Length: 539
Image 1: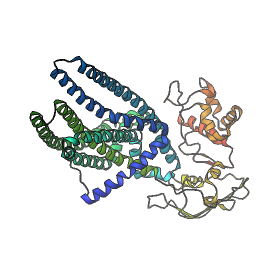
Image 2: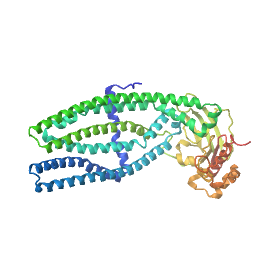
Image 3: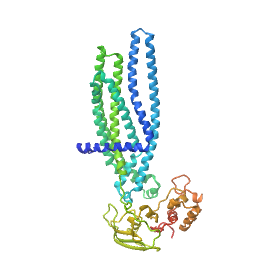
């Protein structure tokens, strides 16, 4: 289906905005691999000059061969020609060597850049509020950022490198052509301008399509996961949902494929027209140069140099414009990465933090707390009041959706209330340093995580900073009733849990919940929160 485009003036502003991401991306690349980047730029400059050297040597070689022919094979003329041939071979070998070296350097760069960007995305994913994970818009941002995080910066690096190298070569080629007519470099440029317009227009349309179809592409990923992962395997089979999900997947893929092919079809026709224009200009200039050669105005060496220089120049111009298009395209996609990295959490440390109490003396209080989840009109808590004295065990009972898990999330300060206060010994928890406050709390969530790690690691994760000893780990397991479960495993506490990796042992939901409870106990925090802690356990 056709892609709706924005007005041209708006599109131009968007182009400028997107290209503004280029310096930021280059800074990101430099911070990831400064040494490798410097070596890469140095190689690009040398590689950019090699084609000009070869073209110049070709002219000298052809004129030398003609001189030998005109002097009936004079040996005096043969020596310089042989030297030129050897020199050309050496330059070609050097070019091959530099090409291999450049590939090695780019590979090293690529690995470092991927690691650097993955670390940035991971840090941002950890920093954003829990509310972001409940927003479809966040998932769209995250999906686009993750989709291009590894490939786009490296692609931008390569296209920028090619742009630099080709620009150096093209400028040198223009200087070589200028003595034959100052209009030749201009003709070279004009012959490729239609291709530039086509490249930029196509990349814009492609990115518009990419953004517009983000949700549909995410849905195809979801349907594929439902068909191929263990989480939904039992229900999909029991309720015979496989055919439904397959049908949904293929319908979306068919629609996406049709739209994509429409874009490619339009591009192919446009490229054909641009190619015809370039070929016409190239043919006209070559005919003009042949005519001058016939008239004796230039030598055969000049003709050989002109042919190679113009042909290479035209190829370079096309490559140059393709590089510009790739840079623009990558800038469009990298905008998604930088938008994601630009997200800011709202749950942050107070600018004037207070010291948390070393020991709880008074307890926890909810004072006129009102809260609704971001993006929801339904109020979860309205003017809610609750006091929990220090040293007491309090059970909160309510129907599904009454707000029990919401209380836990507010106490952990995953969210801040829109009105009212939550206090700890009289101190508003928003005034406590976030990391220190959360270390005072340990939680068994309603749906605890089943970590694909050893039994020991699953428990130690509850207090990783303290590095609990084997005795402390076992004590926590005994408190939760997980010790007997672990003792039956093949390697005891060193048994890998879950089926993601080799030799892993799967547990029942109730057994996983006991492991999670042991993780809660090993933390030994002042505040212990249990959200339906026995929902999967035997009564």
